[in-house]
Image (cartoon, rainbow, N blue to C red; front, top):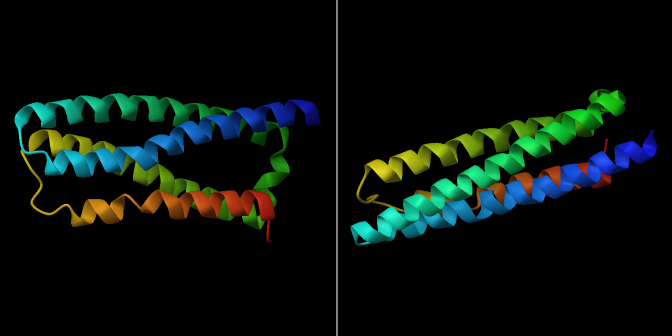
Length: 142
């Protein structure tokens, strides 16, 4: 059973990398989109954002599927404090993912965003989630 669990864990991590690659790059596209001065550039960024969002959503779904399969094999994780905190951080990542979807729609509707300062801060949020999740999963502090 442990071999099965390790295969699931490897696939879970691989698709998590795909998901987070999108979460790191998509907000950078938002910044470029917000600063674009012409309609052709804005249209190009809209297409890029939509395609990247689809890819990262596939990564998110597969991360979730393999995560649930791992939990099915090793249900004792639910009782561990570090795992409970990891799930809380994961909820934050899902909300962030949804907010990315909202930004795609906002940027498509508007010609330009007046202030891209918030997008620059928004761009840094996934780092906090990734560090927290990885450190909890590896160190298991409690």
